[in-house]
Length: 518
Image 1 (cartoon, helix red, strand yellow):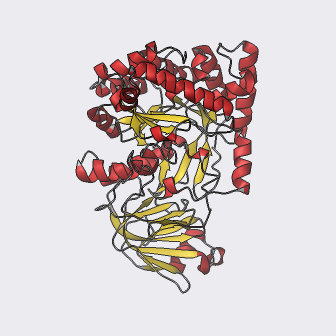
Image 2 (cartoon, helix red, strand yellow):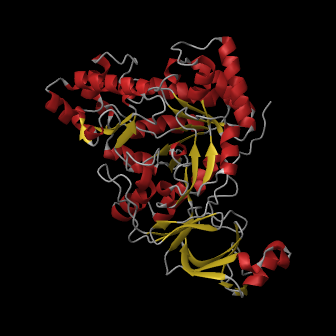
Image 3 (tube, helix red, strand yellow):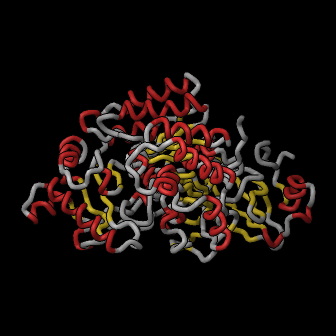
């Protein structure tokens, strides 16, 4: 069996022989279903060095990797000497907002992403069972998995209440969470900086986390504070892992307080110390120094008529010249303009102008209850050196935190890592970066059949040119396709080629595999 992947032999085996050796049943895989991708360098997602080989895909799985001959009827793809890697896994995506209206999911496939994990920041607008059912009826181009979102559990039980949950309300949320976990949710997500989750206390969060842990689930969190109370927020986060024993992920790790820029190593040391104490803590990170969120995030006390908290943020985290309106349905002409520019035009104090803009957004939302995402802002409040330090941490995988438009990370995260941080700066090696996008991400999610180019794995694959791969999206052109992505397959079906999305919708709903705890 020296021609099979992993044995390391150089013998060239006929495709039929490989199928027989791999399955024991030659007729089990029809010849017409096979795709042979040859003349490629394989970066297999494990972190191992690239090597020349061919990959045989039969149906939705990789059948063999090695020195393979084509059989009659095979579709042969000449990779032109490019790199073939596992499809990228976006562990923190918000493309559930648009994937049913843009079922080709261009933001994902155009940068090589084949799997998205949604229900992030505490937001999962529908029960996971309904999401799975809808994906069955309306499949999309990529695989989709989901967390159960704390904020939406809270809304379903408590509406918009600005109070701590009672025992009865918490119990009701636990019942909803149990149903989501049984339907395949990966675990619990929180967005403790956002309404209504920000009004919860640690006891409420812990009760829900323990419920998810009983199902063998995971915990991912946009922590309560990423600036002046960062240490306190990180401790609240770590306590979940300490008390439940579940795997915990710090969402889109960052330091937003200007006076603390440069402290990334200290934060990572805190996480390393927690790991040494037995807490399975990881993080995901995107390669930008600016974020995108709702305008309400800059009101620390969620009093939207009070400019004091906004003024504090303008001074210590995000100056108004670095804060851009990326979406503003009340007056779209203001989009792509900074708060500083808008304040200068209106002749007002930036914090006061921001409050007035928030007031306009709230009024618009009340008048248009069916409007989708009335407003959004992008703010520069991270140091490049900190971003690089987080990217290099061995337990940090890559995520986009992206949507279809607004922030360029939606279309450019993964290719930016490969272009800027691999080819241009050398912060990461190619194999290391791909591992962070694939094998490591799969391990962090407990995905056993994706993230590696190996026989028996699902055939999620990306063919890319490491010499030209790069992001093109920007705040000015937020939906620009990346360069250097040649082809993308999801479950063995081509979904992106020649710079265009395809008509196929082969994505699957990914049901998390849990080991129930007592």
